[in-house]
Length: 587
Picture 1 (cartoon, rainbow, N blue to C red):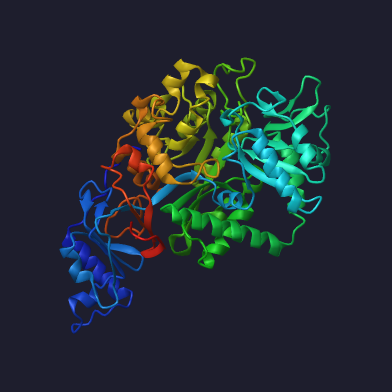
Picture 2 (tube, rainbow, N blue to C red):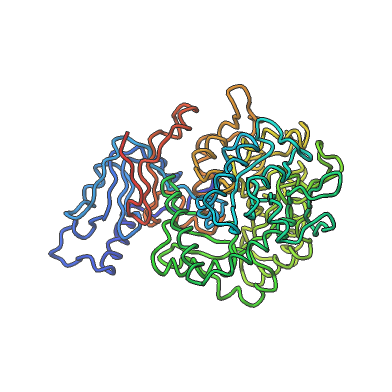
């Protein structure tokens, strides 16, 4: 969400000369008998648009021309005439708003696709709604097979479940409707799960099972597990589910991943996303993504963080590093770790106890030593390092790790290491992001989604001083990016954009509006700032000749439309690599 300075622009005459030379190299007619139009005929030209370029030297335009997946011209309708040939596709935008394609700054690509293949629990208003969904699934699922879902959040239900422990449901009602199926339902945050009695028996979990490091098995007063597993404790049941999944053939596993990639790509294109920064994939998943890139099956451009254990990554990272692979559809150049959990699950690691759970300051889910080792691997192999940190204690610890390693390994070039989420900061740590050159990879929609319980967890003072302080970070000089953390939230960037510029929960309630961004800042947070955070600002994030032809066309002008109209904005067209990848009728 920072205002980044544009790269130096060549004179228009020089740009045209360079592109004419490129056309020759690509086989376009360049003989003396060829006309100028033939030499420069574009594949796709957009005219009649209200184009916001995110290029400070030319902020607005009417038209854009693309050739071989790259932008070749940005300007007026009249200036496009030399670029239009017999085979050029010309689209009149009829005044619609166009801008660089949205770059999803932090989400889970395969997880987004997988979420379309399980129970969607996000809209449940009560625990009873979820029990009903599981009951329906049990009627059509063969006995013994897993029923899985994601998206429940106890703080957003209309009423607490009965019975409950600290507001969390127990397994009593679920057991009644699914006696013959193991059930695993992931919390909206991804940092907590619910399992029924069948699943707990498969995992060997009972009242004697101890909490793992960095996790908690929630138990009743009698000591019996109620089915809720916080942070690393999720692995107790998750490993049993994974073992069942691993019994599938390699072909079945690949088909499953391919379907997830297809669904994720379709969802992104429908919502105007042209690039996606994947917040953590295993080495095996990276291998699959590479195969899909080889086959041209990635619908959007991926920038991937490897998330695996240090022992597996040691000595292997060099062969997994890819920059612009598969016609610039796959880049792998970052490592991902998590040092704490999520606020909604009382798992964010805090400097002071929770207001609504004073016996806890959250959970440190990975040791300082382990995260430091990952960061050392990043330095050794020239990978960016991205650490999930939500609580103020977690953010301080990560900043300390980075500061110590930067001091021990000086470089004249910015490393652009990142903290993923950076949701709750101590005021003393806000300026450290700019001082260290650390990217604050944040998600606007998390603010309004979580605001219903943030003051309950942190209290009003801590919430105001350090919760989702986008503006404070920008004013300090830090680079702040935007995203959704899908499937934690809907991947729709317009929801996150609206939250970023309004911080509005309802017509009457706004969450500390002094931290809202301007429209221009919010667009930059979803375009050029994300590109910069991935070392990709020279190829994407603004509409400049030479950059990738990735564009979104919207029904409303995000700069000038009334705030409430932002929520009604529709994606008219998504262009990737200079080709129309999604199109809906002009309204």
